[in-house]
Image (cartoon, rainbow, N blue to C red):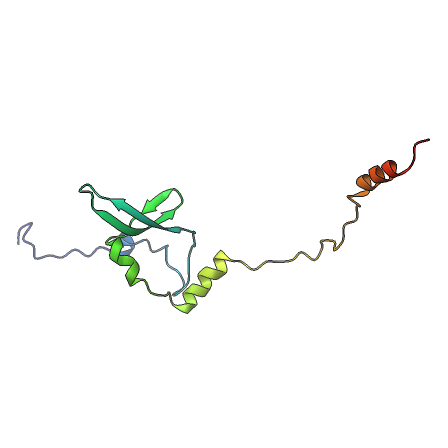
Length: 123
């Protein structure tokens, strides 16, 4: 057979196709970045109105394909993943036990001295 006959197949190793270093534990979140949904009403080149939902992540605005219909197709995320995202977006508050419960300095002492000076008669 000559070159270019099309009868031979070349297999490319998957490691050359996909980034195999970007694998993780199944059903876990790798990274979370907050974004904001933005409801947009705009007019196209023909003056037709569009009502869409776009996304802002950082300084970039994203428009989903068929975004007018897109919002009606939203469904809740699986509970296991939703809990992980919420935990990363709202980490629990920790209280430092070394902080004093009361102030050790009377921050109003100077004000009290001024009030006392006004109240006492001058000699």
